[in-house]
Length: 262
Image (cartoon, rainbow, N blue to C red; front, side):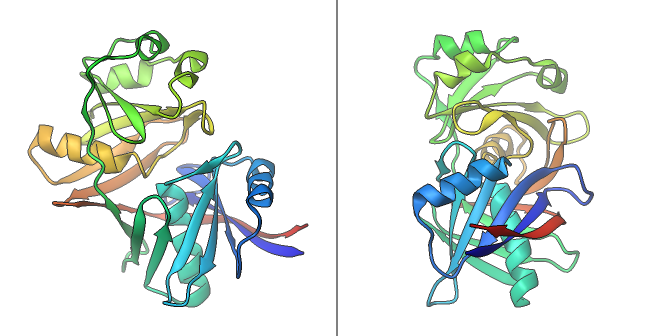
């Protein structure tokens, strides 16, 4: 069997920044075990597999090197980049088991706007000791949604200086950890840690902005926000918060196309 593979840098306009994802378009699903093996072999934060549906949409699934992930923003952007190019599309409708329909539109400036369900965080009744001990700087506030704990800080300097103990944060599974603060040159900045699910730190995490954007929209009294994920590669996102959805806009660039032999 031969499969075409694409590697795309998402949430960036230049190579070697943003977050990389592999994309493998399929005509029918492979076994879960094989897709997990391919994700592990690729060893990028996520490999997205897509499969066409009878209504013109595409089912999508995401695999980290360790497990299947139920929602991934940057790999959805990467998959839309590939499918729009392959099929000359301006819009892609994805269907994902955990989060439903995801709509991605290609814009005139070659950016992509993704419409995702809003996943605003809520207050935490009891903050886990593993979270507090796993962060080198104590947060001012802790919240959580279905994906992660939100450690809120007063300023961008704390976010950039933050160190983590991956062993302790790993014990918080199935929740990951995002640290966020108001930005110096952006509305807000963040870093994302997911040692139990994929790696110590993710470079740019589209999915978590469905929670970050609603939180900062409320704090900053604005619905359109310019965000920056302050990882070693870095990435920019434009977020707009609606009543039930969050739109996230970013660019993507191709790194490679190739063939997998199985």
